[in-house]
Image (cartoon, rainbow, N blue to C red):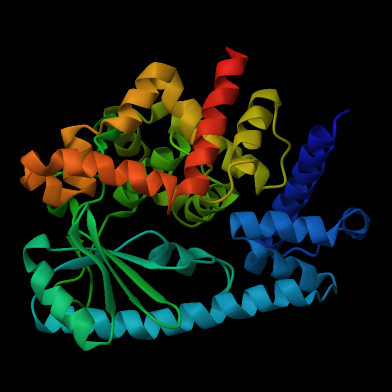
Amino acid sequence: MGEETISRDKYRYAAYGMIYLAACALDGRKPSPEKLAKTDLDELYRVCSRHRTAGLVSFALAAAGINDSRFINAQANTVNSAILFQIEREAILAEMEKQGIWYMPLKGILLKDYYPKLGMREMCDNDILFDRSRAADLREIMISRGYNVIHYDCGHDDCYQKPPIFNFEMHFMLFNDGLSGFEKYYENVRERLVRDEGSSYGCRFTNEDFYLYLLAHEYKHFSGGGIGLRALIDTYVFLKKFGSTLDREYIAREAEKLGLTEFERNNRELAMTLFSFGTPDGAQKQLLDYYIFSGVYGNIGNRVRNSVRKSSRLGYIKERLFLSQESIRSSYPFFYRHKLLQPVLFVYRIGRALTVSRKTSFSEVRALRRIGKDE
């Protein structure tokens, strides 16, 4: 057995341990001493760091009397971040209310409140959908609050940051890559929203539509660079809280429109199996491996392999070298508006790949070569 295989087996075993401890934390159950005796805390922390689950696992470890400073600090940082972000977010949304700008908090902002305890769900930024026609007004709000403009009028969101921790991604749209028709489905997303109680301009999805958006967002990453175990935990937590009240017929109908019928079933069944202390079957184990080795944000190897499967090695290379007009519109709006300057964009991207993004570019080339050898 090669060193790489041993390393993967060790990492997989630690991931199984993390899943068990996460299930214990979510269920308020004290972990089995027998299972904990076999736990390598260093490898466990490595897995948790890659999947952003150290804060969640720390609750289970504490219940078993294990006080590892790395996990304790992860939980403390998660709690501190959540509190600070909430105070800051409420101030920003209050300004948006005053100026009549409609908005809707997305993903982790809401999901963290569905977990049993504060500090269980880690997040590093806040995503908010808002009225694109008021982007300039929002920009003034953010600048007045001391934020740096990371990018503006570029792609599908504006990004603002303020030290030490604040990062807000203010979205114009939910999807902008045309993936499986997601962009078209959510093109007029405002029509799918309902008014948030106690707010004049705050909006929200119904629980059914929130679940569908969560699925679509997860699939976007799953079919690209991959997605980690936290996504399965999010699915489990949401379904545990709202599953019995959801309109299953509506979800099935809309999931079919999105092309997510199979993904929804596989994702739901795997999540409910893992965090209800079940044992995955053969097909589920293969799917679970994909989540385990993706990490929370996926990886280059997955992205290259998934892209090549959709077309070919040559197709992938052409796609990466020569961006479609849709990709340019999403990522480089200036060059989309000034098409005569697009040759400059080509040179710029090549130069960036060889300098600033050199490490990433070389990893991409290596992944492409490995696929070539497999073929």
